[in-house]
Image (cartoon, rainbow, N blue to C red):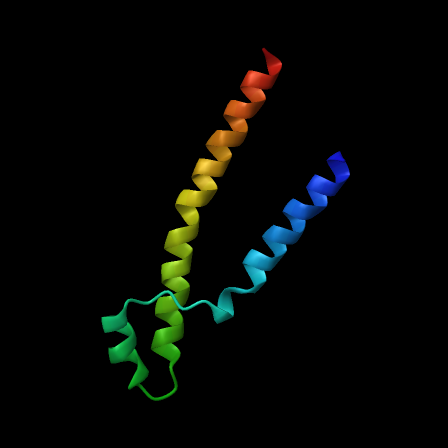
Length: 75
């Protein structure tokens, strides 16, 4: 049972990391301005920046949760 959970987490992490090309995270105003640009290089850069900024709080909360879980498990 424990190994199955481990593989599910690894699969979820893999899918999250490698599916970011299809995620659109711009607001409607940013999208309207950036869609008119030729080549879409700036739009891709802004999307990647937004996703990066969005991921950091989730990683920090996950790290704190993991530390708390380990502390509670010891006691």
